[in-house]
Image 1 (cartoon, rainbow, N blue to C red):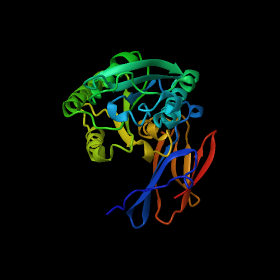
Image 2 (cartoon, helix red, strand yellow):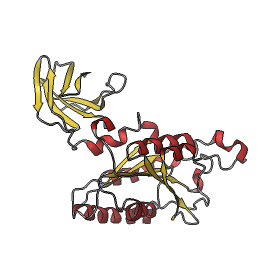
Image 3 (cartoon, rainbow, N blue to C red):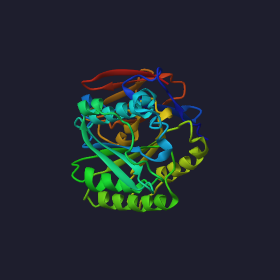
Image 4 (cartoon, rainbow, N blue to C red):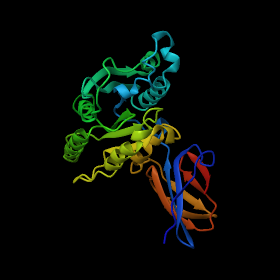
Length: 305
């Protein structure tokens, strides 16, 4: 029986790699999987990115919107996180990121688009929350808005990130899964490029009682099986991310890296390829305590396991 995956975390994991994990499928052999961290220096770039922030009433205190304006900024817990995330997304998508608030209005089904912001505009923008705080939580409208408007003319893969502190309504969850299949069918038919949809859960002082319900929603989307085999969704919790680069790891595993080389373990070549993908898998002796990834023209990258 194979052992569970062991993940190598920073600082033991080198900066060049976004993921390193290994396990023992047998007493004599170690299975290793690594993902090279996506970076513009390796030619990584998304066509478009967008960030949608939960504008429901449950977020009022997290934005500090219940406080007088003169002291609100310093108490706003969303602003620094959203500004940093939006800046990161823009840097990886032609220096632009779409921004909107969702779950707004009486029933939580309205959207308040802010626009397409450049990196300098993101730094100047105050993430202060919605104009009309929502009385419910509906995710499908903003997913549809991004898909049908913001990402309509995308010429390659893009990413839309949705931040929330709560679970969206039951009826909306059903509509969301139906619309996901519509997206998958259009992508499979070659009519559209993939819009990778990422949901990030925000744990606050007020939503402890809803975390299990949110996890249930996450589980349904992570395990959504389209008849096309296309994977649209990725979910995680903001406090469990090591850095924003993790958002791209699942997306790029099967992308070509554009360079070849070999993996050396205990003085032997465990794997050699003319061109690697960002995700690299190889086998090594169970006794191996490290490996070195040699990439042609880039360098050598030793990593402990």
